[in-house]
Length: 244
Figure 1: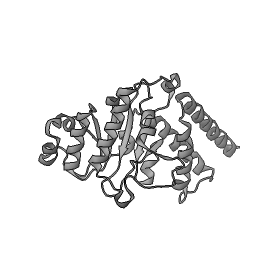
Figure 2: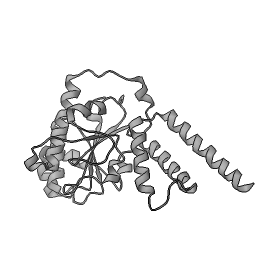
Figure 3: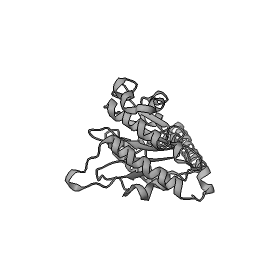
C-alpha cells in the first residue's frame, strides 16, 4: 500500500490556520485524503486557504462527516495519535514502530486519526483504532501543535513507503473493515444487555475493554461473520426459551 492512500482524519479541528497548514504538508508528501469530523472552523475560508498556499485542492476535496465511524468507513486499519498515557491495553508506539503496520493493508484504505487541538481524542474515540501512536517530545513541553504532529507523521509515513519494500500478507485481504467490526460490537452489546451481563450504567466501560480485546485480534471478515452467527443463534435460543 502506498502512503498516498492513507486517510488523514482530523476530529473536530478548531483552527482554520491549522487545517490549511495540514493541507499544505499533506501535499508536500503526496497525501490527498483529508477527512474532517465535525469541523469547528471554516476549512474553506480565507484563513485556511491562505495557509494552504498551493494545496487549496486538498481543502476543496476534503470530506466532512459528522462522526468518527463515518470517517473510518471502508478502512481496515486505523492508528490513533495521543500524547497521554491511558489505559489502552495496547502500547503507545513511536511513529517508526507503528506506521509501517498501517501500510500493510494491501491497498485497502487505512487511517491516521488526530484529535482536537486542546484535548486530543476522547477514550471513546480511541476505541475505534487498533493501535496508538505517540510522537516523542521533551517532557518540559510535550504538547505538539496539531499541524506539526501531522507533518511529522506524514514525513515518517512517506519515508517508510519510499524506502522499504513491504511484504504482502495474504491474510490482510480478509481483514474486516472497521464498520463491519463496529456492527458486531453493537450486536454484541445489545445481546449482553438483554442477558444482563451488561447493565446500562456500566455498559460503556465494559464494552471499551471488549473492544480493546477484539481490536488486538485484528478480526478477519469471515471471523466476524462467524461471531455474528453465534450471536444470532444465541438470540434465537433465548427467544425459544422465553416462549416455552
